[in-house]
Image (cartoon, rainbow, N blue to C red; front, side, top):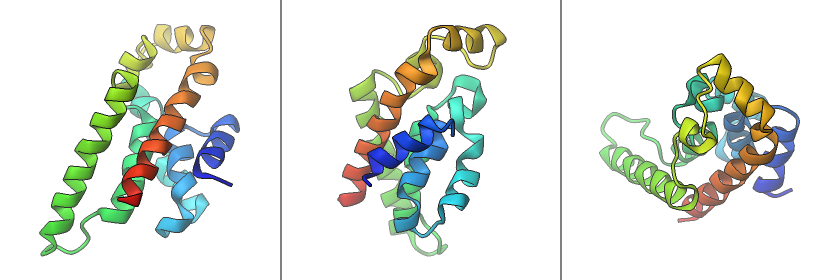
Length: 145
C-alpha cells in the first residue's frame, strides 16, 4: 500500500488529517501505527482552531522523525529540520494557496458556525482529502531528498 493509499484509508475511517498523514509514514520512521495515531490526535483541523492544516502538521512530524535534532550538539540536524520545514510549507502553499486551515477551508473551525459550515459544505469529505494527498506527496518528495 502506498503512503497516499494508507493516508486516504485512515482519513476515510474518520481519523484526523494529521493522524492519517503521520501514520502513513510511521512504520518506516520508527513509530507504530498506534503511536502515530495517538501522537497526531491533537492536530486535526489546525489544532481544532483553524491554524496550520493538520495534514501539514502530520507531514512535518514525519519529516521531524527523519531529520529532527535529538542530540544537543547536533546543530546540523536542527538546521536541516528548519530548512525542510520551510520548504514543505512553501511547497504546500504553492500547491494549495495556503497552509492555514481556516484559509484553505474558508471557515473558522474554532467557532460553531465554522464547524457547521464545513459540515454543510462537505469540506471534510470533499476538500480535506485533497489536502491529505498533497501533504503526503510533498512529504514523500522531501523524505527522499
